[in-house]
Length: 355
Image (cartoon, rainbow, N blue to C red; front, side, top):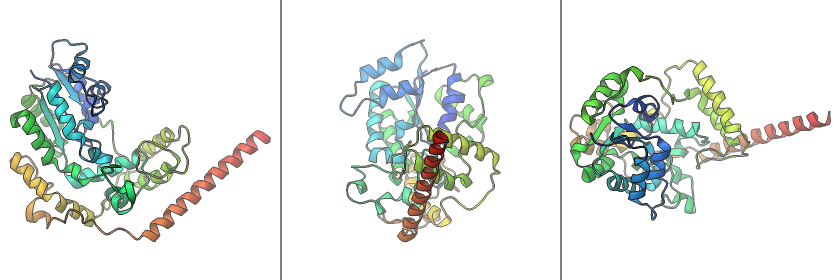
């Protein structure tokens, strides 16, 4: 009976675990996310106090070990875990506060993971296209192009073997449990496996097998990117024309409703076949190292390594940037549409009050 700390990654059903699974644990005491964040993430780098964090997590102690699930413990996807500085710092904090914890990590095939990250970026208010989101250094200049000054999306964040090896060193390999997200296709089997591995007991009668954070239909992404120019929320790397009060929530509700109505048809890859192949080659070496750390863990067809993934691209090499002129034209078109909409709104208000 030891504490369990589920550290992510993002886009591996952590919302489902937090809302529909872990609150119904009988063996462990579920700690809500705001308290986990207050204890382990909110204190700045030079002001962390392990005793204070331990006391905060321990409030309401009922004799059961703690159960934490917070995906940001592995780093935020849209800034590459603050250029990779946050994950090892948080790992050290967890080791100080809960040295006997069992660590739980879910990984996901990188091509599917990165496509899901882009969908989440647009859902969170992003306005850039896929290439601009994934390769920001090709579009930015000066301080904005330096990830140690202004962190952006980073492929390094998904070198899973680095994070697993870090936690192995801190907690011992036998205490770090790694599972492929793809195995969640059989929810019941995965939960049974986790109960056995972690000493976890769940009230199966109360579990819900829903999708509390279902992604938007890909057909909605172009419209979402256009609408996102009228809100400042919630991602930093974006463009905006105005920040209309309440617009973020309104556009989110509208697009979520439309996503549920529109049929989901299997279409072309969101990333494109060429970029998917590049991503598979980029992570071939990392996946090979993770296989060495956890033999037999990864599905061969999804986590390609070695020759199956093709030659790994040089670290600085990226797929060719789309023509800049087209991007500029699209930006100007979006801006013009935004200005026309604002002007139409202003005229409507004047008519309302004057006539």
